[in-house]
Length: 375
Image 1 (cartoon, rainbow, N blue to C red):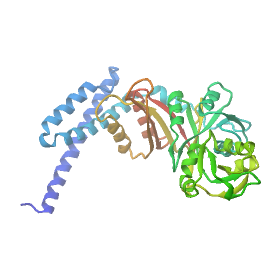
Image 2: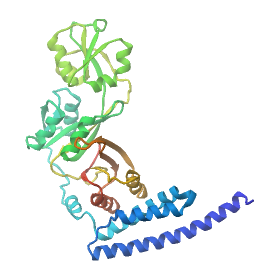
Image 3: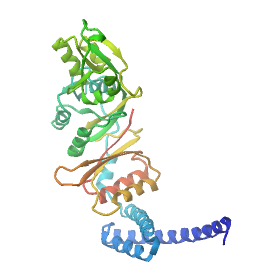
Image 4: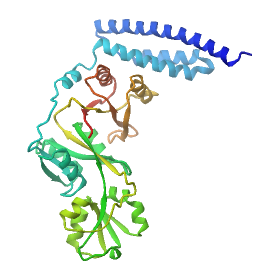
């Protein structure tokens, strides 16, 4: 029986042989790419790939499934090489290269959901301190305002570190396919705001947005408060003032408490003291700043086994870091999904723009949503 050192020597020898064979195979893939470019043939040939994978699985014997996975990755890499040779995604490349690098922020009109004092209002002020903010009733209204040209940009929450994704906003992103041109991680700190005449011991009910209620669930349970959902934290603060009920308080921002004249009865209510909400900026026009560090895409996947894994293989092969992947059910087709994906990178990198261009050719319903800086 061989000892471990002897087995490793044999593995190293086999690996060296495999590397040389892999290089030869990629050289052949390069020749295929040149031929396809000269003869205007699409890079992706699902029938051919499936035939190879089925054959490999059969020849692999007891290791058939492993061999299929190995060759699936090899073909992904071969196809990526061919896309580069063919120059896939020409229109997308042109759109990216002609994108403006800076947006004029002075006097810009920016929409947000809620009213003054809402977290969205604070995010809009931080992102556009010299802009004019426009209040909208719903997230959908923010998209409509941007779509109609009533405002240049919209500021929307997409994710909270404690409560998770804001599904409604992701659905709207996938519906409208507007560009994302900026992002902000806003620390969220809630206070308990009541009437000037109220004391903490008077409070029996708290009003707030469902996300805020979720983010303060331990605090609410600890004090045995009844919680009532509202459309916005700032609206909850305004309504507490208007209703004039001593036993009701709002869970809201300090900005909202000040805006509507609430007395702060308690502070730092959130269960997670590092509580943060990520906001994005949407626009119908593409802007890509020189220091952009995050890219967003959306797409559906082909009905092929392992298609999501194959997609992720592309990112892994380039050492790109995925920071978010969100799937949302399609409204028009049962049990089919659209995907939203974020990863770290800049489109001015050849590897990155090559990858995006390749995916635009292969992924159904693909949209490049933007390359932007996250503050």
